[in-house]
Length: 213
View 1 (cartoon, rainbow, N blue to C red):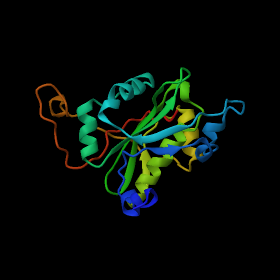
View 2 (cartoon, rainbow, N blue to C red; view 1 turned 90 degrees about the vertical axis):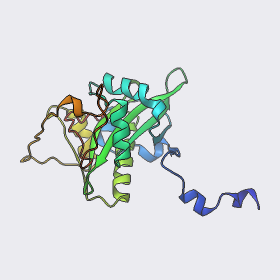
View 3 (cartoon, rainbow, N blue to C red; view 1 turned 60 degrees about the vertical axis):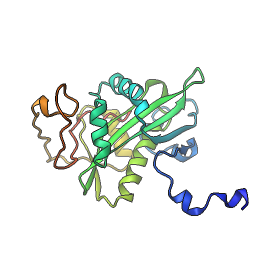
View 4 (cartoon, rainbow, N blue to C red; view 1 turned 180 degrees about the vertical axis):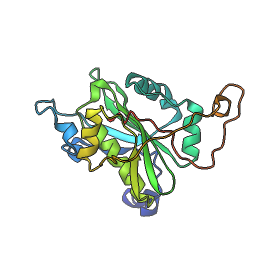
């Protein structure tokens, strides 16, 4: 068997989401108005999108913290992943030539719509199309599952995130309110002395930041 035929078509199709998805700048440039606000911005570096791995948690936690988002604890991420949700990360080289987690997005679904939560890109890596690439990958994954739409919560004054989502074809629902109820912390997955709770569905906890920087 030749090297060319060693990897069959079936094997290629069986690759899991952990296989890295190469994302060169030509694939993501000018996806949204948000990415082109600064016409004189330097040419973006290539980056890679891939599925989250447990070893990524410290970097993803720090990224969400830096963006002002409330991070999920590791047990909550594990619960989300086991319930059909996903966390995607973007890797890129920093100015020192080191590869690091440049962006991350967490999303889940309820069988009908996908819900976007906690998307952030590090300051050093903004204006390079990473947010648009993460958003587009979520859309592709949701479409492949047969979901009907995408939803998120966002603060009204988050203009940069609004530009990102609007440029990607999203729109707001002016007559919709966001309601919620905080549960007893003892029932929250990962709480000290408590077993991780198993929800009746994998509806996400709303995060109105909608940070798509």
